[in-house]
Length: 475
Image (cartoon, rainbow, N blue to C red):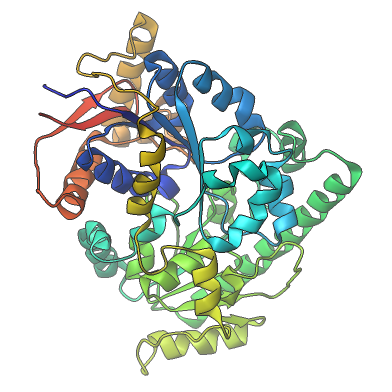
């Protein structure tokens, strides 16, 4: 291996299904520009960056707790810290965004660059940073939406073909009810966690979250009943339910267990499921926007609607229905004898989308992000990573070897110990399910062929420990 000295770019992953493929696209474009990219689970990646002491670290958010936890220790050793807010697109109001994502603005003020989804978000973040620091704001969109555009969506071509062959004209139902159907892996209830991480700081905050929990619990029940009705109404159609990563997956499996044409599925990127679907049904979900960008018909189901907990942008995409009869009629037009049809949308949706999502059309996000990073690249330092070793302690190496062995014998282990114990043994969490080296390399090589005009193939992939990899081009 012969890797030249270059700027390290750290790309942490929190939620595999949501972030990994988009970060691999960004990583591919970055190494084509000469970066050495280190990608992996965010828990270890911060420690890797501190050990190296150089480079750029791209956070997924800029909440106040991140200042002491991540930003400050990284900056103390010389790492530049930027933020690509993965959860900054869908919010009921700017006030709620500022309260939940910015707080006092301690983290946002400390960042070198702050990447936003669209121009509309600028007014959301400006009050939290100093006026002299407004130049740090970069409107770039998000690489997740690049994946739904040509030619990058072709990375999912084979996967889409498999899905369509297996499920034919399936309907994808995306849910976002985590407060009302909270995942047990957090080890605490929704309200308890909101208090612990500082999102409930007053009596009024607590009351708002209580009412949000109640509202989304009702919506969860409405959607369970809707899926049951759709299953009976369209017995020859598959319905794929994808819960939000923070939802209780097992609740959906239990409540929909008797339905032969319903599958609850939350593994992998949602993009191929969107591309292959005959239609997407959602409420208040980013996937509704992704479906629109990807050209898939979009329907909204709103049996109840509380504007305090709903967002204008996703709920302007597609046609909304508040009764199951209207939803069924719309699906008949899409998958019935009339054939597939595009959904209409709320008046002005194109203008609204372009205001809030910079890469819905035009310049793709991964290029805009890398263009902006040039402003801090010279200040971030360079180093040679040929001989970089992370998992030095014997305990860490033994633990990694055990986990990797458990993953290799997945199916026998599932049969012996069951899904719950398997996830623990293989460290497969609902939000972070691990990173496959072969899948990573295959996708990076595909993206390199699209983003790198020279079509270089001398890609180096080096494992740096469990679910952490170095990606670089050799000299």
